[in-house]
Length: 222
Image (cartoon, rainbow, N blue to C red):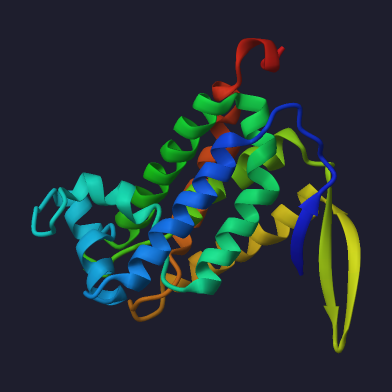
């Protein structure tokens, strides 16, 4: 099940959403072009749980700053494409609701909380976390609360056939959230190794879901 657009119109042009997508793509191209290699870049500028909790400064950037750099880095083209697709589908409506500046601050806030949500579940991990997933998870949580019945056009794969179905947002995002929670719980009993930072997704999602109304301008809240 792959969503590709919604039927939720906006009143304003999504400058910040498009800017974030463009910046993520530029950073990824920089990662690819770097002579240091993707792994070295991730180790240098990714958010490493132990360091962002203890502030141990062994990377080129201070550990707190790696939370921001990691937010715009990705591990591969599919990682980037999936995140940018979800940001494009759901981000413009949250930007429209919050306003451009407030949306950018909300996005970064969700990314910060998601990084620490992962770090406190893996406090001794030296595996760098990279990707916009945590911040985008916050957008999904916000969208679920504000636009639960908005239609989301989704590709459904039935063997060799592909069906396009319009599904309510609460089903699409709810299904995504259930997967995150199940995998997050399962990951607590597995050998710790590189992979998906499930609790970053969960932390970002809950942050967006529970705080979005606090971010709304007064006239939008009314």
